[in-house]
Image (cartoon, rainbow, N blue to C red; front, side, top):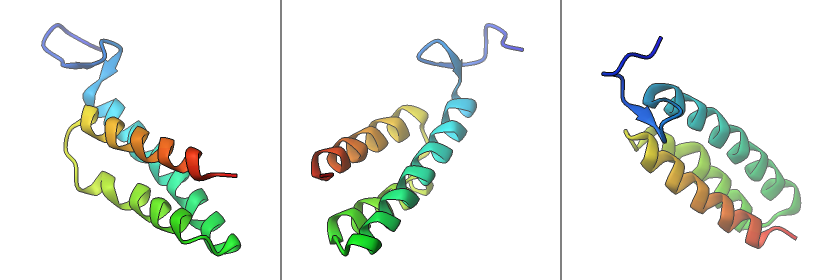
Length: 81
């Protein structure tokens, strides 16, 4: 399991688990936003959805992944009506 040398994300799970979970969460949310943008013809949803699907491939640290993803989701929530 976890030994004392395994780095933890927020002291709860390993960084690798947090990273993989973040990728899955942000890819699914990005796909939903992208589809909503295509259906309603709102460019901001399409762009935010695309950003949510692509950015996990550009970061390599779990805290950075979750920070950028949370910021994009907040931006999406503000624009959602």
